[in-house]
Amino acid sequence: MIPRYSNEKISSIWSDKNRYEIWLKIEIAICEKLCIDKKIPKKDFLLIKNKSKIDVKDIEKLDEKTHHEVIAFLNSVSKKVGKSSRYIHQGVTSSDIIDTAFSLQLKQATEIIINDLKNLLKALKIKAKKYKKTICLGRTHGIHAEPTTFGLKIASFFAEMERNLNRLKIALEDVSICAISGAVGTYATINPAIENFVAKKLGLKSEKISTQIIPRDRHAHLFSVFAIIASSIERIAIEIRHLQRTEVREVEEFFSKTQKGSSAMPHKKNPVLSENLTGLSRYIRSSVVPMLENIALWHERDISHSSVERILAPDVTIGLNFALTRLTNLISNLKIYPENMKKNLNLLNGLVFSQALLLELIEKKGVDRQVAYDIVQKNSMTVWKTKENFLDVIKKDKRINGIISDSELKKLFNEKNYLKKIDYIFSKVFKV
Image 1: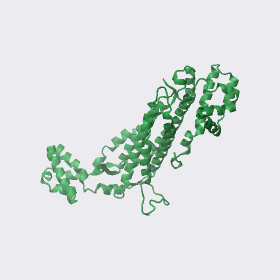
Image 2: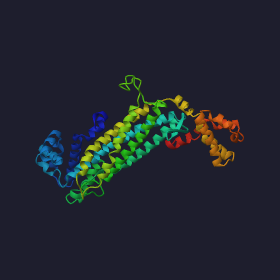
Image 3: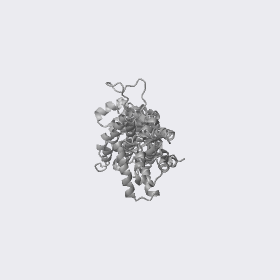
Image 4: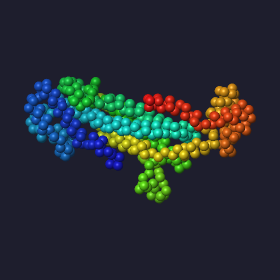
């Protein structure tokens, strides 16, 4: 991932240094178990443990000759260990080391993203509760529908991200896998007890059955969850972008004193953070198809998946970490304009109460539903055309004013009617 979208903590997980150090940790753990099982003399194991060191530049130099990264890694480590290095990589194959290390890297990165989600949930919860009863318009198809609250909008985002957190925890379990089963996965050259020993040391679980690699459906599951999270990020970003439009301006991204909106138009304050999140979400989602295609490999293994994973695993996890951090800051610093929400609520001169009138006619006044609908719709279309107040138009309709009193109409045309179940919804979402 380019530096602009990279955080050092998660980026370092995907560095060559960290990858080689994990490889070495796995190799040493294998040797430790072999020593316990008296397959390696203790003095040799201690030499391996104490003298093994990672030299990234040396490995890179050797890789230019061998064209095999694991062999280059083993040759580099062996130079430092000496004769005892003959016990390193005993009975295992490259995939045992590479795949188990990849699992650990994914685990490390996903744990950071889980923490990012928790931080986002905190920010959403604060905003939702603060604006719990702040009335605003609900919109369907981009058109004014009925009143809702801004807190309820945010609460829906909270619930979605909470589901994402649960999904990600399950996917993390699914990908936290150790496979040390030798060539083609038969354990012919290595005791399964070694796999279990290494898995426990690394905080992983042993694969039930591998070929020569960990099955890639596990990785596809994780990246599918990443993609869902990205879509949830975009849903929030799009809502903010729409609500920040000049004609709406119910919310606004924080704009610092020194910030510039446009090189040509000095007045501009654009929703650049939300737009950036939309773009990042598209990129993160694009990883799903290649990861799904990685499931289908030739026989017990091929390396067609390798290049995909080397590129996408770092970029997607780093990008998602950046996106979640940016969204958390955006939500925390989001400017809210309740006065504009109120103004927009009245733009249609009361038409947002059309369903309330419809239900009153049907449920309390006994009017046939189709008849009632036609009456309310005809008056609504008049308001669209003339810009008159909906309540005034209704009072002129003898079919309505003959059965509904002015006091009853006043009660119907009250935005506070839409707050009745807000506490109930919040109790479900926030479990309080």
